[in-house]
Structure formats: structure tokens, C-alpha cells
Image (cartoon, rainbow, N blue to C red; front, side, top):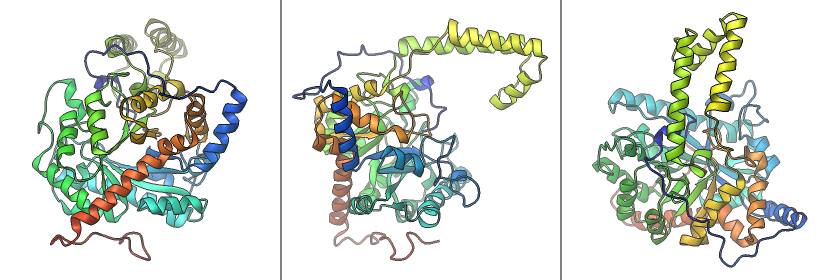
Amino acid sequence: MPISNTLRYAAIGCLAAPALLSAQGRTPVTNEAAVMANAKAIHAAVLSIDTHVDIAPANFTATGPNYTQKLPRTQVDLAKMEEGGLGGAFLVVYVGQSPTLDAAAFASANAQALEKFDAIHRLTEQLAPTRSEIAYTAADARRIHAAGKRVIFIGVENGFPIGADLTNVQKFFARGGRYMSLAHNGHSQLSDSNTGERDGVWLHNGLSPLGRQVIVEMNRLGMMIDVSHPSKQSMLQTLAISKAPIMASHSGVRAICNHSRNMDDEQLTALKKNGGVIQLVAFNSYVKCDPTRDVPREQARAAAMTDLRAEFGISATDRREQQAQIQALTDEKRNAYLAKQEDITARRYPSDPPATVKDFADHIDYVVKLIGIDHVGISSDFDGGGGVDGWRNASESLNVTAELVRRGYSKSEIAKIWGGNLLRVMERVEKAATAVTRGAAAAPRVQRPPVRPYPR
């Protein structure tokens, strides 16, 4: 999800964070040399999958710097994945939500989505075919990993680009989309978003009639249903419809951080009953938060900055235009402005220390204790605002494994958390699709063509 999603989406009110639950039956490892030696061995052996990484098509061109290199302004690229031992990632076809739900908005969103699909295929087929490959199935992922290449999955964040045409679900699946969420930040034509908690305004009270059809179609095709952004009511209605396990591609624990994007205990328990998996996200605002403190502070900071800009005649609302106006001030006024800005952000309304890998692992411990080791996974939301101290980019992925080792998780348990649980869900979704389509009158499933991964 994009960086612009901040605490303004936090739910009003905050649950008191409970005493964090330790991993049941596990003995913490305190010898740091032993921790790192064990972590390195485990990390090299398991298939680690990050289920949510945002992309910019500009980083997937044949000319200029691209995703095959270590890019200075991205948290993920093939070089960082290789350096950090990250075996695979879902690169995300993300299109932001439009306030209008009409044909023009749908067409624009669809074009943006196809551009990102094309960018991902360009990476694996033209730019780095010997270093990466798209996985269409769980079996593909294991084969690609065994060959020493990075496993590239495609996820679709927001079903908005399918518009009102149900056949677009099949088209996205044919291009490699292996999960899709029905909404993002804002209600779509398919589903309400978690952001309805801001003002209590809902569009569908869960899923729309078309959204319900989309779930059935995703089951038919073998496409995982992602519930990270839709509302709680939408998620529960999805569970009542889906014939296959679902997943949350990048969410946190609401009992620890009371944010509308995180799952409460009722949702987690329902997810377990469904056989699904929550891919816990290392996004600071979803890992460590206190809305009763954070929201008023953010509002006060914003008000102080508005007053400061007015004082110095900074009238632009766009950030780049604001910076241009600040640079146009005389040296004396610009220095005074910057000094007052620092006073506001660093002294009057300072942010809390950032969340750490340890804070992130607290979410893992909580879910393991509540619903079991088989329903927990890992995601970063890198290049969409994600990252915590210790795991700021893909090259630092070993630090997550090391923290799990410190907490006493075994190799087999870490293998489940880093990707095994996700692949189990994917396999069950694939099998459910076979069962749904066997003998059905509906159009046959789209299979990967033998030469080209999707029609051009």
C-alpha cells in the first residue's frame, strides 16, 4: 500500500495493549553467536517469501537503472533479494482507489494495472530470466527456488481495475495474478474498505453483489482472496462464501496495534477455521501504535505546520511546490523557517522511536499463541511505506529469521512462517479450483501457455 496511508486511517480509540504472549513451549536462545549461526543456516535452507512488495514500472525498463541492480531508492530489487537471502516476493499490481466508480475511472485503473503486469513480466522474461521467474503455482515456487532463482509471484492490490467486467478476473489470472483484494483505501465497486471506520460511512455494508460474484470466480480460477484492506464485515462475508482458504497479504494484530487495517481476535479465529493465513506486516504504523496518543499529536503537528507556512507565505498545497517556495525565500527567512520546522517536528511534537524487528515478532508470537503456527506468514509492504528498524529493505531479511531463532522457533516452524503456510494455502486454493470446475459448464480455467506466460 502507498506511503500516504498514515495514522489518519487509525480507528478511534485504542485497546490497551495486552502483555505480549511468549511463544508456547519454546526456549529463547540467548547466546548471540549461536543465534546468528543457526539463523544463517536456516535462512539459507528455507524458501522465504515476502507477500507484499509495491513496484514502480519505471524500475523495470531496459534502459537506465532497473530492478536487476541495487537501486538507491527502492527497498526491494533482485540484488537486495539475493544479498538478503529473500527467496521470493509477491510484486504487487496496485492501483489507488478513485472516488468515482464509473467507466472512465475503471478504464484508467485497468490500464495502470496492465502496465504493472507488463513490467513484472519484462523483469523475468527479458531483464533477468536467469535470476528470476514467475511462479504460477506453489509447485512452480519450489522448482524455481531449487534452481537458485528468485521466485516472483504477482498479487493484485485492489480489485477496482476489473471494473464491472467479471471476465477481467480471468484476464488478471491469466497474466499471473495469484491473489487479489477487493478494496483498498476507499470503498470500491466490489467491497467496503477498512477506512469506513474513520467516519462510519459504508457503501455496501460488506460486499457488493458483484463482489460476491468475484469471490466465486476467484475460487473457480484458483486465485487467492486477499482480505488485508477490505472491512471486517467484508472479510466475514467472504469467509461465508469462499470454498477455499483465504489470506491476508499484509496485516497486523489489532490487540497490539488498534488500527482498522489490523485483524482482531474474532477475525483471526475465523481465519483459522477457514484454514487461511495472515501474512503479518512490518509496517511501522501497523506494528506499533496508540491512536489515543498518536492521532491528537499528528493533528497538533499538522496545525502547527499550517500556521508556520502561513507565517512565511508558503501557500502551495503540493509538497514539491511547497519546497520550491521555501527554496525561493531569502537565506535569512529560509533558515528561520527551517529552524521553526525542526522545533515543531523534533521537539514540540516528536515521533516515538520506530518499531523494531522485535516489535514485529511480537505480532508473530501473538498469532501463533492464539491460532497456531500453521496460520502465520510474513510480509513487508516494502516500497509502499513498510519497514521497521532491523528490516528496512530486502537485504536485511536475515534479521527476521534471527529474531525468530532468539525466540526459540525451530527450523521447521520458521520454514512455515517464512513461506510454507502461504504455499499450503495456495495449494488448497488450486485444488479447490479443480474441484469447482470439474464437470462445470463454466468456461475452462486459463492455463499458462507453453511459450508465452500470457497473451500479448
